[in-house]
Image (tube, rainbow, N blue to C red; front, side):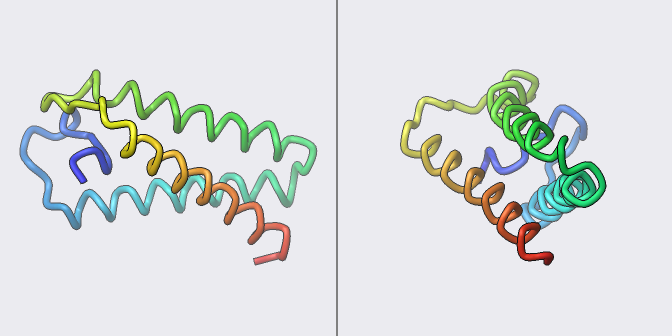
Length: 102
């Protein structure tokens, strides 16, 4: 849970877990809205936008701990694997929802 949304370099104090979850959800909603816009208004750019979003998400996994004030040890392979599975699942769910018109 420490790595949920590692933004301690933006805010001097310690955020409550619910605030971190809320920020994570807001970022997810904004990302989903942008991708939905590509899916509807620019279908030819949807898949490149999805790849860029996924690549950015992966890069942030490595960049945010480097920028963080609190050091986080990222040597756990199981944690990384679960993180990858959940984020791929998120992008897949977005695609399925957009495809069905939701």
